Length: 616
Ligand code: G6P
Image 1 (tube, rainbow, N blue to C red):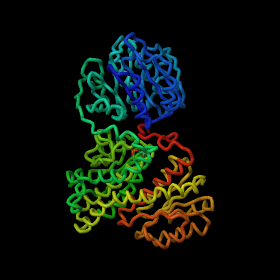
Image 2 (cartoon, rainbow, N blue to C red):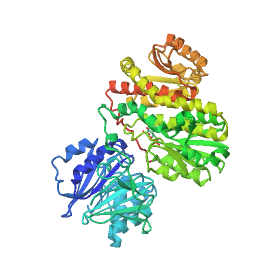
Image 3 (cartoon, rainbow, N blue to C red):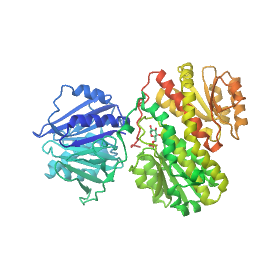
Image 4 (spheres, rainbow, N blue to C red):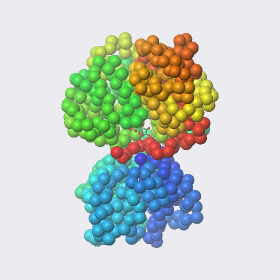
C-alpha cells in the first residue's frame, strides 16, 4: 500500500526512480510524485494525479537531469482524496524538506493542531504533510541535524510509517525510517536504492538490508550505510542476498500479469512442492513443522488468521487440518481477531497466512498471539517480509513475485502449503496411516500437470463462454465442504477485477436468503466436484434451475448428472477431495479474468485496491 523509491548515486536519478515506481505501482496507483535534489541545493517536487505514466508526462518538460538524489512515491489514498496536492512527496512549508510516506499517522490531527498554533499552514489533507512539517519545525526550533529532527519527530508519532526524507541543503543524504510498514535498502556500487520491496532494487544490486521497526537508515553518497535506532544507538547491519530475478517481474509475453500468473501455476505449484514431498511421495517434510514438532503434537487448537484471499485459503486449511489432524481449528479475519480480545495460551498454534507478509492487520494479529504465549507460524510468499520475521517459524510458498493485484498463484500456493502442512502434522500426531499419507502425497505430485491440462483444455472454452456472461450484473457462487471457500474466492476474484457484484455462499445456505435473488438474469457458478457432498449439491443445482437461473458448473470429468442440468460445464480431472480446491479454483480464475477483460477493465490494477495493505 503506497510504494516508496529512493536513489542516491551517480546513475540517472529520475529514470531509476520512475522505473522503480512502475515496479511498485501494484501497491497503489491513484497519484504519484517525485522529489529531486541537485548539487546546487535545488529541491524540486513534481506530482500528478493518476498512474505513474501521468507523472512521466507531467515531468516531460521539467528539469531533472542534474539530480544527484531523489525520492518518489505511488499512492493509495488514506487521508484526502487522490489529487495532485495530496500526492507525495510533501514539502515542509519553507521548502527545505521533501518527504514520502507509507502508513498512517494516527495522531496526525493532534500534531497538526499544535503546528497550526505555532503558525504552520498546510496545503494538503494528508497526515504525511503533518510529519514533514513536524520534522522541519523540530529542526529549526532545536537547530539540530535532519537525523536528530527525524528521530525526535518519530517519537511524537503514533501509527505506522515508512518514510524517506530529502533535504535541500544536504543533497548527499537520504534519511529513511520504518515502523510497521516495509522498507528495504539496496547497497550498490557507490549507490543506494531504497524501496518498499525489493522489486525496484533487483536490477542494480542483490545486496539488501531490510530495515527493522524503529530503525533509521542514513544513506550518504560515498559512505557506507549507517543504521541507528530512534534512541540514536547503532543498529546491526544485516546484509541479505536477493533471490529475485528481473524476468520474474515482467509479463513474459502475456498481456497481463494476472494471466501470466494464472498460467504460471503448474510451475509455481511444482516449486512449492519441491523438497517437501519427497521419496516419490513416501514422505512429506515441512521443515517448520518438523523443527517444532512438540508444538504441533501438543496443540489443543489451531487458530488461523488472514485477510482477503489468504483468508479463503485459511478456510480451506480448516477443512484440511480438521480432516487430517483431528484438531479443532478456528479461522478469523485478522482485523477482527486483533480487536476481539482473543483467548489464547501456549497450547494454541496460530497460523498467519499472508502473501505479502506485510498486511497490517495480520501482522498485528501475529504480535498479539505471540504476546499471549501462542506458538505462531507464518505462511508467506515474500522472503524477508515482516510476518516471516515476526513469527516463531513458518513456510514460504515459493511461487515467485505476484504482481497482479488479484491473487491467483499465491492462493493455490497457500492451499498447497496448507495441504502439506496438514499431512506433516497428521504424520506427527498419528492421525493418518502411512499408507493414507503416501496416497495423498503421491497425488500431490500429479497436481502441477493436472493444472497444466486444465489451463490447456479450458482456457479457450472459458474465454468464449465469458462473452455470454459479461453483462450479468450479479453472480452467485455456490459450493459445499472444500468447495465452499473456493466459491468465496471465485466471487471475490470477479468482484475485484470486473466490479460486478458476486456473492459466495455455502450451497445449502442459499435457500435461507440468496435464493430470493435468483432469476434468469442472475447466473450461478456452482463448484461441484465428485466428493462426499456431491449428491447434496445436486439438489441445490436443481433448486437454482427450478427458479430459472442459468448455471455454470465446475464438475469432475465424466460427470453425467449436473452436466445435464447446467447451461455450461467446465470439467476438471478427478482428484481426492482434499485436493479439489486447487483444481476447481483454476477455471474460476479464468472466468473472472475474461469477464473483466471483456468489460475493458484494468485487471492488474483494479480501481481502489492495492496489493499490499499496510494500513488498518
Ligand atoms: C489485498 C490484496 C488481496 C490479498 C489481501 C491480503 O486486499 O488485494 O489480494 O488477498 O490484501 O493480502 P496478504 O498479502 O496478507 O495475503
